[in-house]
Amino acid sequence: MTVKAWLDSGDQDLVLVDVRLPGAARTWQIPASLAIPVTQMGERFNELPKDKKIVLYYWDTWSSLATRAAVVLVDHGYRVRELFGGVAA
Image (cartoon, rainbow, N blue to C red; front, side, top):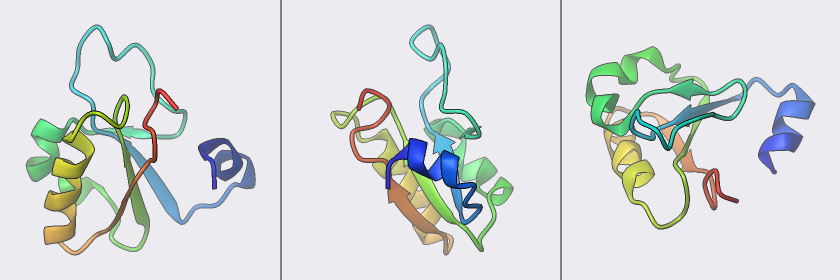
């Protein structure tokens, strides 16, 4: 499912999380997503619901930041996926 299809469907079983670091390159984010930088994931994972699938995204597939955030969440019992291709896709 594409992000647009998910947003258009009104499905509430997913939570999109932008794990990019704050800065000039982060000028926008996907509508309806949360911003929790990977460097803060260990302190803020409790802001995410455990009964929903967490979909993490970063700028593109060349970064491992979404994977690093996923490891933290999986270790705490969350269902996690990474957005294929990131924002660039």
